[in-house]
Amino acid sequence: MENLRRRCERRLRGVRIPQPFDLDAFCREVESRRGRPLLRRAVPGLSSHAPCGLWVGTPEADHVFYDPGTSPLHAEHIVLHELAHILSGHGIDAALFPDLDPATVTRMMARVAYTTVQEREAEMMASLIRGRSARPPRTTLGRVAHAFGFTE
Image (cartoon, rainbow, N blue to C red; front, side, top):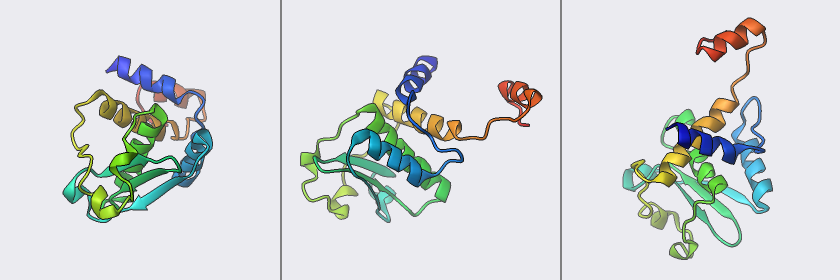
């Protein structure tokens, strides 16, 4: 687990994470790094057919699909998980999705169990991204308490 965390931390070096966290701003950061549009698409019911989220990279853009029928925090984590796939260079063959029809997407790419290395990496990175956006303690005592797992 520690090796996974270190690998993910290395991948996040140089990635600007907004403080306080703002998903729109973070998506713009990923767009900027990739030099191409990032389109988030809500697909109601997506998780009832397959995964909670999905990333498809086409030659023109990155498309992140997510199920909006969950809590806002969970929906944000789903998007962050898919953005972690993008930042890690994990690939999906866009030829599988020639027209990106949402009904088709709901039947594809069943990433529901974290059993592969890529899925574990994406899950760890999503958690690290959100964790890095937490406001740091302002006092020396607060920083020491934070280091031991206590909050200020």
